[in-house]
Amino acid sequence: MTRSTSDGGLVLPRYLVEDPSHRTPLAYPGYRSTALRAPLREPVDLPHRLTEVTGPVLGEDRVQAHDADLTWRNGGEAVGQRILVHGRVLDSDGRPVPGALVEVWQANAAGRYRHVVDQWPAPLDPHFDGLGRVVTDDLGRYEFLTIKPGAYPWGNHHNAWRPAHVHFSLFGRAFTQRLVTQMYFPDDPLFGQDPIFNAIPPVARDRAISRFSLERTQDNWALAFEWDIVLRGAEQTPFEASDPADDDGDVA
Amino acid sequence: MNPLDVPADPPGPFQPRSGQRGSGFLTGPLRRGTTPSATVGPYLAIGLSWADGEWAAAEGTTDGFWIRGRVIDGAGEVVPDAMVETWQADPDGRFPSPEDPRGAAEYPGFRGYARSQTLSGEFAVFTVKPGRVPDGEGGLQAPHVDVSVFARGLLDRVVTRIYFADEEAANAEDVVLRSVAEARRDTLLAVPTGDGYRFDVRLQGESETVFFAV
Image (cartoon, rainbow over all chains, first blue to last red; front, side, top):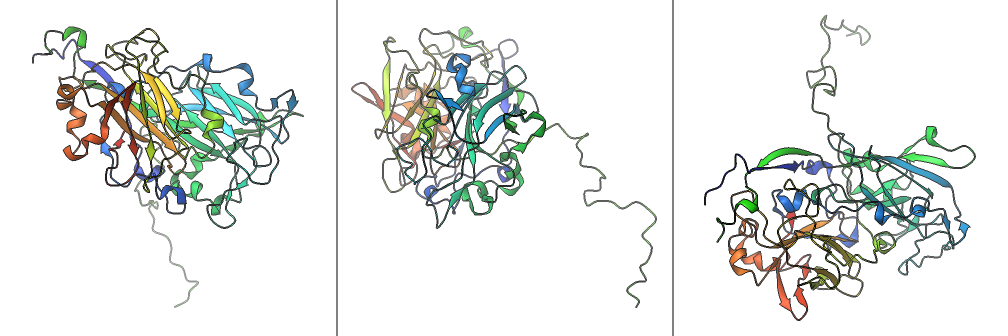
């Protein structure tokens, strides 16, 4: 097969692989549910090709105005400490990731999720559903208003309590950048006994903890926490293939 | 010996173990550590439910079909609280993404991306057969769908690929399939059914699905 790579060659980003000693492992012995769910075999290396370096465009059309304010639902104010959660979505080279869809969900101030599976004896809040969505701006910034979630027991071990956290789901530009994670609050006394937090390698735990941000608190209204989210960065590398439009004669 | 008779320090400057007085912040590449992943947990339905989630291609798209399947744990139990996401090329082998260096393609009604929870015992995604995409080694990949699976009990997503059992010729020359031990390739094949294809994900066990490190 003859191919021109000089004029038809594509240049693709190759997304950096974080050092395994800085990544959350799939399984962690203290987190019991991982035992039967986390795969046991070594994954097969998948070099980044076109399917891996592309990703869906999911923007403002997925977000409504009230999605950035979780504190007003069903015609009333949610109970709890109002907080502004803000920060930037960056890649590991420090570049902002604009136009990124950020989906968040969380428990209410009492530590209860509005979900049929969550049946512990803490009250629901009729004015809180725990769902938020935002899209990052041109500088990769995001902000939403919510209430500080409560801690809750979860039965993993005796007297197991999850530290307060907000779930985050992010799309970057590419399939390789997809991230689902949890944001914690500074100095939570429950960190020590939580296997989901402690599954994160010690060097990377700080990256999951937001920073109290006095400068962005809003007078007579809300406290503020800042959390930057860092997705994998990329280097540009030649991808030695010509455009398939030029290939019609080549492929049987 | 007098414990208070401390000898003078050497005349030259002390050196840290690295031999460099500084962190290297100004001389190394600017690199920020990536945010560590965490489990999606049992309450993902609150944050990740979309009314149009299952439609990678719009309802009524010509040659559209369903891919359905279960996610099965190491005890052989169906996982009812997982989410499966898919991403793929359109039938021309192009992507609706500006990250495609050939340019973003628009194929009518095609989003290329779908997400489906397994509440009913299986996921379901409506899509079209992807076209073949260059493999970067002078050939074309077989039609494939990139898949992420999220669930309580998984601290990160797991990634796999769906290939199609009725694409034998293309599959035989696919560079990714060929990188997988022959005995395990079947775990990546979606099998034709009445309304499309079936693709089960086995998280553990004898026929554990092949997962990929991306």
